[in-house]
Image (tube, rainbow, N blue to C red; front, side):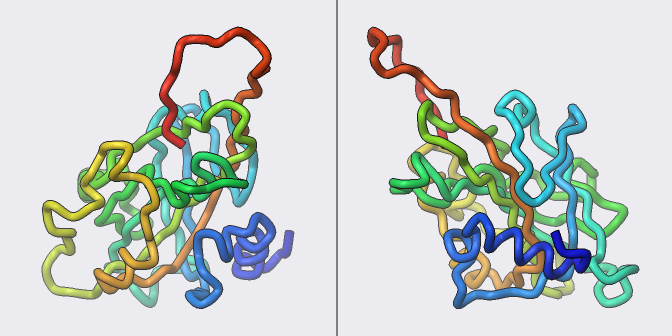
Length: 213
């Protein structure tokens, strides 16, 4: 991977086709904020490393860091993080592409993480990865948006689709439209891979288990 962090991020996103499957080429962006996605068990998303469903059971902590040094440009900026799955239910047949797993607003710079009291409650509560059997590898993607620079604390109005928690409400979410609607700027991205369980379909039918994405 390139020694240049900016180039490394874009290269990694292109390698797994997150550009253009999640971030359209027409919405190309320049990463300016790096962020860590760290699970309570110590597992961490790192631009495409593979993790297990068990490792991603609990909501991760989000830690922000300026890409080019100290927070000189926007030390008081706040951010919204979204986690989504572009491979629901299958990468080859992603009819529910961009399944929404998490949306949290009000993230701040170095001193504030998603678990800090200053961060707003999640609009979309964390839904752990649950790829259906035999659906292959899923690219769970985290997008970081800078919120508008306004005097009051930014909030998304109650009743917005992002508050919906039902499966049907989380499917086929559009993060680009969400960002444009609220004046967000995409400033960072990260992702991890989760491989689905392989089940021998020749076996006798088993009790139905519902999966998310």
